[in-house]
Image (cartoon, rainbow, N blue to C red; front, side, top):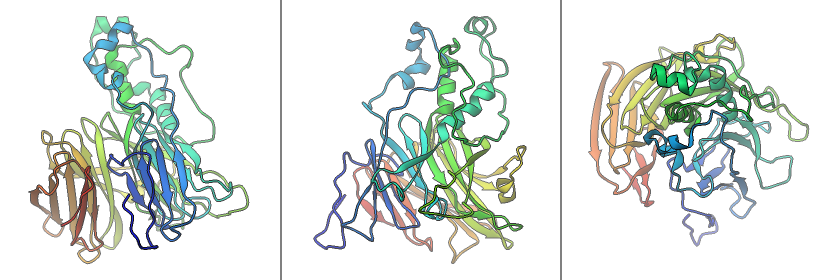
Amino acid sequence: MASSSSTRFQAVPLVASPSYSNSIAWSHDNLLAVASGHLVTILNPALPSGPKGLITIPSSKPFPIGVIHRNDLLSPCMLPTCLSRDVRPCVRSISWSPLGFSPNAGCLLAVCTTEGVVKIYRSPFREMSSEWIQVMDVSEMLHTYFAKIKYGEPNFLSTVDQEKNGDYDYQPMEDIKISNKGKKQNLQDNHNPPLISAQQYASRNAMVSSIVVAWSPMIQSNSSRSCCSVLAIGSKSGNISFWRVHQPQCYSITQPSKPPVATLIKVLHAHSSWVTSISWSKFSSDGSPQLLLSTGCSDGSVKVWRAYINDLLKSTEDAHASFSLLKEVINGGSAPTSALSLIVPETSPHKIILAIGKCSGSLEVWINDTSIDKFQVFGPLYDHDQIVTGLAWAYDGRCLYSCSQVYNLIMS
């Protein structure tokens, strides 16, 4: 990170260059998280010379999704799984929760690694340590969900049966409620995983391999004081899982508190390939709050979804959080989408503005006038020579900040 001679700025040594999208995130309680290599460094800009927080990413064991024959390792579908350039897991995506979701009234930090693992951390306000505390392993709960529904497969067939019957289609996955209770629930025997085909293994691995995380703005029920936020997790399978986390009812920095609980409320098949970017925005329609969600894919497609807050807030086990497709602004076939920034400006509440960054370095801006329900596109703009790794709108939607992998910052 750049340094300055002024004492207001802080020079920070990093173990590696931040190379993924969403590598830098600023929280609502004025903390800056920087993901580089196998570390997340957390800074307090209000105390440039003060202590720094750290999150060290450990290696994780593969989920027991099954085993395949040695000869199947040469199958084309196994290449993304067998080939890896990372000696140790690195941080791929980070996202801060809204203010007040940590037991000390601060923010939680969701971290996604190159191994596809997502965990949530809080600040060490009681431990007197620089290392942040893990409070939740979302990937473990996601694996429990898919194992319970047999990964969406209609019948659990052996490899021999598959060779006789051929491939089969996956059935739609039902929503169930899963809360972290501090216990790992592996529905399959870790010591005796089933024998499956290479295609089955690749499909299951894509389901449990996460790529990007994004917290929604805070949402509140009109009938109660309960507040919550939804953590969206995009995976290699094209699915997005949505996890509802409620704000604590009380805070304490001295007494032990209950860890946050995440409830799986929806698994949405948003794209046909890797979900590479997610962006939320809150707006008001006819006086009622609404949520918008934009999603980007490795095949270049970009979609905008409308989320129904009443469904997101339901607490019953049979709740089905609804998302309707508002617009597929870009079809597949173009350069992979690397970054998104969605905003509904307070000065223009009838406009939905979406900035799209591509791996080719190009930018596009899509503007939807909700009064006439029409999208208008500006671009592409070729302001970067490398992959666009970050986009951010100013609050009024008039200025767009973008950065690329070679770290040149441009204001459009």
